[in-house]
Image (cartoon, rainbow, N blue to C red; front, side):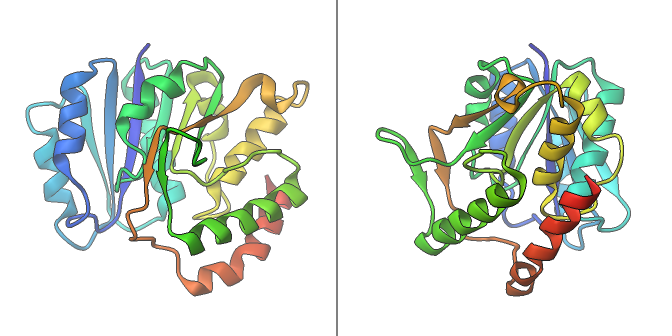
Length: 237
């Protein structure tokens, strides 16, 4: 099963570990990568080119001239992957690899059309989050559930996979939210599949491992915008 993984990067020169991508590239030949440089101001672009050097059949670098935000960077990566390879699934992972790439097979094994990694610290699993991020996350998830009624435990985990046909539809137009776009994509998928229950085409997979990098890009002012962003998504998606 062919899969393309989008890695959005903005000023990731110090945080991005090339060996993580290269080692998985060597290990799993069914996975291709689009490395998106979202208008970085540091040495990210050169680092991404180093990763892709000599591997350009399965690793592509997409350089955006200006910073457009994670939502659009992911979307541009998805559109590039769709145009470049005949992949069964398109997904995206965060550049800090809090979710290891080794989780990909377990996610794909579900066979659903929209697959979400979920940070649930079950017995025998290694999910490490700072306590305040955990409780802020639960408060946010409660707000999302009250407004959208998805019944999803973790909408914001930075590891998702979408079947090609559905990806073509939900990424066809830009998202209205730059950083709550995961919720918007879920809402779009739900609307497209309005004749089906959410669990029939979508699933959450508890991750075996997730480690908090401690380098969140979310600012205090972003938290104040959450209610307005959620309402905007509810109205426009």
